[in-house]
Image (tube, rainbow, N blue to C red; front, side):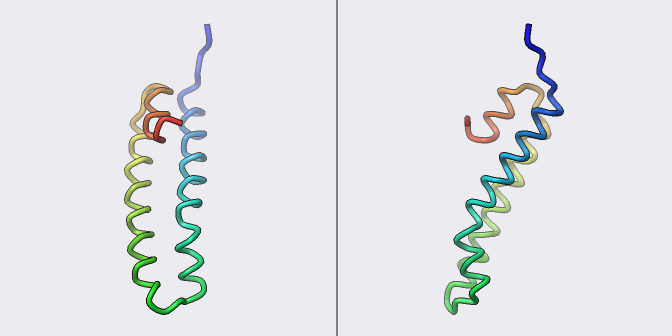
Length: 77
């Protein structure tokens, strides 16, 4: 029988969540870093939407009691 340490599984899930969030932030980070006129407001709004999305995913991972729930929180990966 295989036993899974749920705390370690959650830590791995959070690491994956952070990586996915960073990937989604990348194009908007570039626009903000380069101070591109006309793109700043849209980029910041998009970044906030990403933050909101991943805050919900973080809560789902924290509430998970099984590896399957963690996987579902991450979008089934």
